[in-house]
View 1: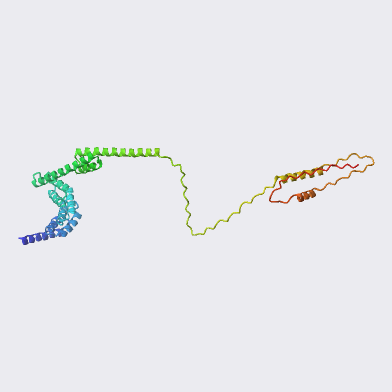
View 2 (view 1 turned 30 degrees about the vertical axis):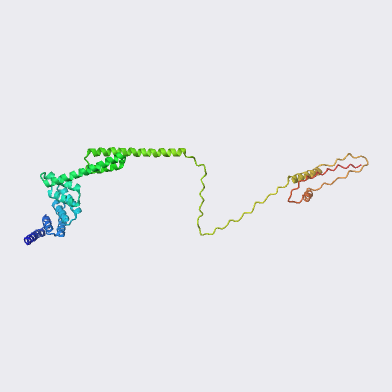
Length: 328
């Protein structure tokens, strides 16, 4: 019996191959690929389907056969992808929905199963198998949902709003049409934002109090010590500067002494001797010759005392001015 079926399948493959070879762009490639798949020639089927889609990129039946090929190879992720693509071109394909449901069962994808069974019942409301499976899945999901809602409420009672909000958001993601969940999420988000503002205000008040009561630091900040650059050049030491010479102030008394001598000499040069009117038979008075100025300055230089370490403090007596000599 099996040998007869194999001979029939191979004979069908032969007939379809002849038709495909005559016109490779025809839609017969889908039937030929399905015949290869039934004979467990998966790679040959995928090769023909890939070539056929180059000429017919929107052929939903071709994507359905590719999904079946991957399902037979237990590559469920790829199979699910191609079944969903088939439904994107043909949303009323019951075969694609049934294959999608089987693939999601193998993947333990409850959401995918619910989507597939709802689609099947929308097209065939009397499908009892799909109805039972959908009812069991929804009841199980409700129990899990009640358990998670109870957890969220418990977190909310404890004041852990963040965890409660996270659970409600997950539940709302699974059922976006639930108005109660939408309201709860909105309420908890408002509480979270209000709590964040209160914490922020408390931090600001704490900082203000610290700044008010904190004494000012009056200590001068130490100046940073400059870091000497590390160079390989030899630094020459600065030449020591000689100490400033101590200027010995000449005593003021010497100037006074010189001025006194100059006054004395000036008097001797300017003042003329007083000569009485000549008397009869009396000799003329002797005139004192005036000394030149150069000789006087030389004498002054000779008279200057030698410089000594200690200044002369004794006053110099002013010489007496000679009185004019009266010649009898």
